[in-house]
Length: 145
Image 1 (cartoon, rainbow, N blue to C red):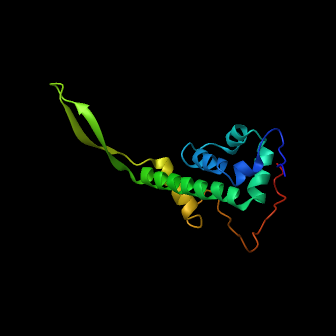
Image 2 (spheres, rainbow, N blue to C red; image 1 turned 45 degrees about the vertical axis):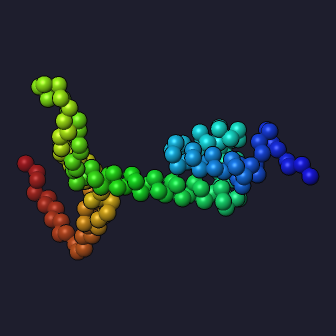
Image 3 (tube, one colour; image 1 turned 30 degrees about the horizontal axis):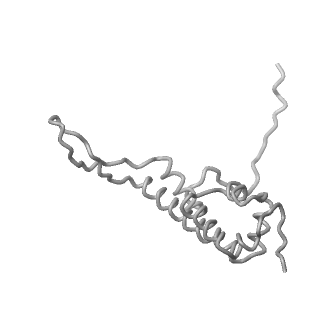
């Protein structure tokens, strides 16, 4: 029995077969977006989204590797909020290469972003303050000259 192919795309190859390994590489190593992966497969982005929902193995590839990438980004943001050392190769006056340890200072914007998102109840821009009670208003009619 022949498999149904739409636009000459073999769905089973990409969602269950060897093509799934290629998709893993695109997601994990190349960090391609859904639209780029859909184009590489030869389908629309809407079809890719349907496949991710309908075929568990296919969807898991995206969830797993995108989750790992998100954790890497969070770790990088945390590192830049704290500041860190790097090792850099430089040339001295005689042309000799040597390694130096260089401090990369903390980024204030990263610190603000992290603290507002990790501790929103203590650090937020907009505070909701309830004011209870009445404020007395006195109207004087003797403003006439």
